[in-house]
Length: 303
Picture 1 (cartoon, rainbow, N blue to C red):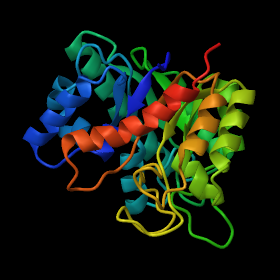
Picture 2: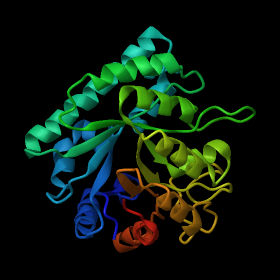
Picture 3: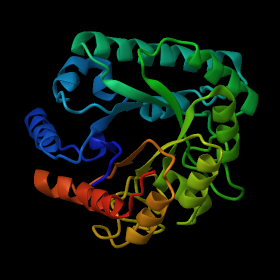
Picture 4: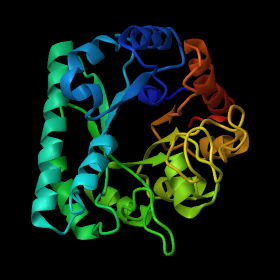
């Protein structure tokens, strides 16, 4: 048993169609090991947030919002968009974007009558031009807002690398850790994004240890990656590839998950976010996620 919250990035594995989606959330809610879900912004949080809120059962007491979908959509439209942008208008656009996220957190809490969101994941965009001081200024400003009890956490994505195109290309892990430490917030590790950054399956463990050593590790989400093309996309795509038990080409196996779990004592939560075959049944989708949970449960250490 994992004595910390276990978060599921359900949006990556949710089926198409509202009825199937409702059935999927209902089945997920019956799993005793699920503590809550990661909600993508904008997604359903933009126009269908009341419906989405209705899918979250009362006993899910650890839900988060990730701003990476909206951040990347904005970066693709405007390369200067981001909390770490040196361009005044680009940084202000990112802060305005997070004002909408902030308002939605309050909407969810006010309508549900409880603390529905435990954390909001922020990111150091833009691609290839993220600046340390700009991001620090933005995070300072965000930290002064009322988040209705939700914590801010910096989700690390891959940083630029010489000779290859990055998937996200944001700040280095060391810079994000330094900012988190100074401001007093946490760092969120995504296994796949750390792995693809360095093209090394040991990179997530190194990143996790760096955050833990500075006492800023919030948690780790196990989301796989492959150095070969799969049904989830091209090689080294940030495609939420399942663990190697379910996708043999995945670099995220039991050994890698176990090592990170064993070294995440200071973190507050674990989680999993994977894509699944489009033809997978609802129970098969959940079984693929539980495969990750089972490895975590077998290796978790509590203080």
